[in-house]
Image 1 (cartoon, rainbow, N blue to C red):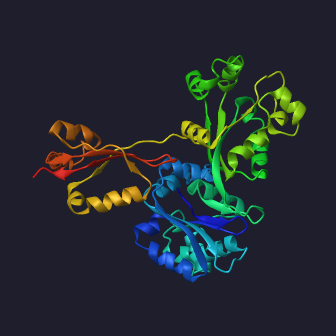
Image 2: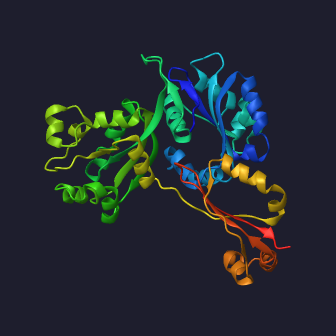
Image 3: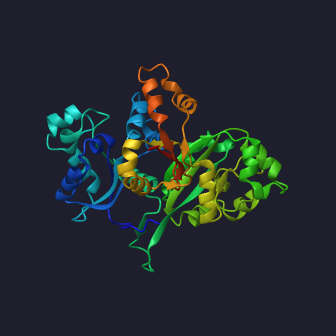
Length: 391
């Protein structure tokens, strides 16, 4: 597990060296300039975002016309994800970093901040080489998004022990998901949580029964089932120190009468719906249950990849090391000889291309070992096929 630490009172920002700069081989050069400018690199991870992750990360820009291009760009190759502080402990690390990288518009950066990173390494507005958190709230959300197990130490902790950032699942049920969403999200922020993942989903009865399997025999389950399938549910993965216990305490008792009588300020009492016996907010019971529930609403994905023979013979070990270094787990490997029919079916989307016959001939000369891989806690890729020349 990730055991890196940052003081809760130590200012930090999240930075990204984007795929365009990494593809140009400029990542190490940029890292050197970052350190020379007085920034301390607390964490550095090389990682390729999936399109689902890119959409989640840039959800605040979903209304922009360039959103789809931005998603494709950020998922198009590896990035370097950084957590930065200032070596002098400056409280202004976020504005200092944004000043250092320059304006988002490349032409403006070259005109007004020619020494900035974006002016030096960016190529156009989307491909502007680097990202920086705009404020402390965004930095907190981005830290939870990329480094959910990052540890923090708090200056106000009397026992002096490290507090671990953990995640919990929150569900806002349909009756309040639309009408009170903004108010509830504001309360969540005030409570010190960061929304690491967010998804709106319309559940089927079968999905509700699977999620609440331990409750199906309870008297209240029919009402719960009706509530959970009456409209879209807002699912949130919340992050902070002691997230599970803190969210449970903030919710209050699950029984609404008890919540209103004993904890009228709790969230379940505040957002109770008239004539509705089911409380409108869910929270995980334990850290273990939290991870299971987060996986239910934000499941892992699988994909098939191919390592071709020109790379297979000389670079197999390096490629495998790179795959595992990015958090993937190889779960399946199988060698097989492709027939011409298999190759034609596999590449059928290229059937009208002039290179199709040559591609099929090439693939039919190979032995193919497939694998599957998974990255924990992320929506990711997971299957590989290694190809080797039969000779």
